[in-house]
Length: 419
Image 1 (cartoon, helix red, strand yellow):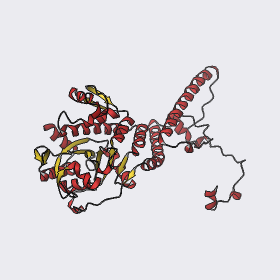
Image 2 (tube, one colour):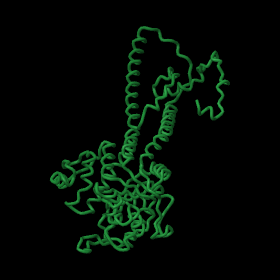
Image 3 (cartoon, one colour):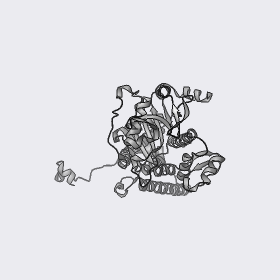
Image 4 (cartoon, one colour):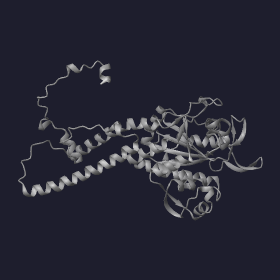
């Protein structure tokens, strides 16, 4: 054991007196509380088998966990049937005295055990998942000072970029197909989603001129999109997360699909253009969509406006967050593990962990959605022969800051209901 040798461990000093009584007195056998709480027999748990080295990824671990659970249930059913036959023919032994465990205490023991399992498994699992992510160097906006940006210790803003990358393009030269700011608002206990319409006409600092918002990455990569949004709308963005279409499909499939109400017009658009949407079929009505179908649904843009397109994207994102909200540990573990390798981010591992902790409480609250430009702050315009969305920058800046930092979930829902 080289590790112990390095720490000064002397095997010659090992105590070899195995004749000592190591049995646990009946009144001190605290494992009985766990037996009562979970209905599991721990009397033969003295032989410990280390199975950790046999798993190379989280999916094999989870699959083995499922198999083990089935084996335990089968054994328990056999034991129960055997016990019934024995009780019918044998005189029951006198029950030993033991401490009574109240229902409340059983539940508490179960919760403590669950928390311990999550903490122990979660620590190793988190490191495994975080190790699959691609990390970019941190970046500071040289076009606007941090002091001029609205920020709060109670709000974390993460820019989610969906990139339509082609095989013959460098990733950061691909224009952002979708731009959504995810605001984790701990002050009001909710998550706020804000879509930025890609045809919005804004000033791009790296370009030193005006252009469509989704063109910002063509001038200075993903940092160019962050810089542009900060410059125009005055909110501090803590970092970006980039995902391509493949990651989106894997994410949706990992949670078992997303439920969406598809209109006849939307279904017809996808079904009639297989090359444009990846040869998938949609049916009108409320259906659970797989990854390919959900991606096609999010990309629909020919039948209406970019306003409706971003609304479809937020609808799918809200459905994904609803699955996260349900908190199925096995499903979430597979979702994170399967999706991690497709993710690129400017956030560090420590920042991701911190944001994850902050999101735990917020994801249980309301999930709200908005888009930029806000109502009554824009007009269609023609720029260089192309149709774009011209906006009142100051009004959008003011309303975005108010939405993210000041308004409660109830206030936002009341306003949107009126609209």
